[in-house]
Figure 1 (cartoon, rainbow, N blue to C red):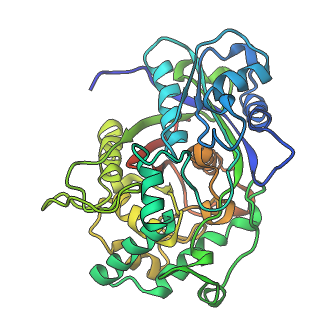
Figure 2: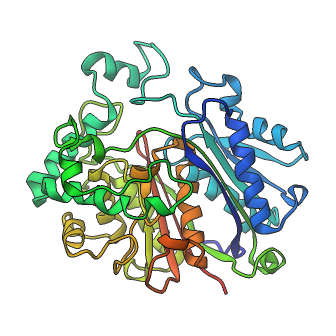
Length: 404
């Protein structure tokens, strides 16, 4: 792999997650940017390049500027003539634009770069953005079956329960654990800590997934500022080295039924969630790390099934290892041997699609710096990993570590 310049995170900012009917997408992004600039002790004019998350709900919210999100955000900040790229990789967008901003600095083209994304969710189940009965596979699957995204997750969860013995109690404990730090994160939408009984008694949405085992849709925005490591000391005494910033796509023959489709074409030996496994393999290769090097994880707990399935992917473990760790308390977000989702996860904040990856990176930075307050994990931290999965086979992952 080509040798790049070393890159550091020097500033992070986050608009709270929730529902903000009186705030536009660019307004939310601006708040996140100002917080990141203040965190880095940097002026807006010092930013040399921007990668922005392309907004998904163009037909329902904010029109053309949903696509041209970077242009809209820069205009709201006050244009300074920098190059801007807007990209959309569904729920993996935050990780994808983080990679683009990283590459802008790592390549030597620029010394500073910002990744920024804001999302105003359309509300309720995600639904098609057209009524094209010929080419829009998303609309076609809705017309044919009426299946919402959680229906896909539920079917995969049923298969996992049969294959590896996942129980309803395991699924409920995911919510119990991820809700534990939620009251102590000022950016989360939901502050309540739940009991297993409350989770199991919540409404059944898609068997076996209860209401409290599926994340909500939310508004939110995040920003991450990077610069070359040799210049980082100008901005912070606690830079975070970006060891890996990658994206992944599926391998043909994946056993998972992907969103928009109604069947899979499985091949022996390929497995499930290959976009995740491919991204994780790339992250470990780029960083020179192994699963046992990771001290803290932020993963996409869109549902309780996602939590266990993606934890296995991240650890490159046999399916079912996540449940064993869950039962032993190893993944407790504050006290565990391997803390998972100390932010409270998507279960506590809801999903602001294109910004979610930046939410995760924000949390890793706060935790590695020791700035997470009452949700600060108790073990000594050096290396963190974040991963987001995206609709239709997109995935993004990053590994960051202390550089001081």
